[in-house]
Length: 151
Image (cartoon, rainbow, N blue to C red):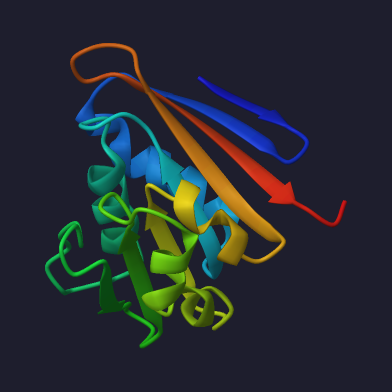
């Protein structure tokens, strides 16, 4: 089921087979540049969804969660850079700032951010937030919202 409200998209995924369609819908809604943040409990599927998004963008690199490196850099099929962040181990905004995240966020490239709370102050005024809720062994609900702090 897909529900679209102004600046908001809600998607239900019943199994991993639905994930390519979910990823396409998310890309269509968010576009292919800017900051997209992913929230959800441990094991909710943040990295799995990011892998699918990168696959659809034509990324040939191996997609892994940058839990220890903090930032992974990929190149999509069009030669554009995609940045993948994982702030799980980052304690506060100063530590996030120390990674250079703000520079990446304003680069114009697509930035996919797991565990974004500590870095929200560094993000542009407008970004997308995807909240992932686990609703079963393979089922998930994806709520995608566009945020604009200027509005």
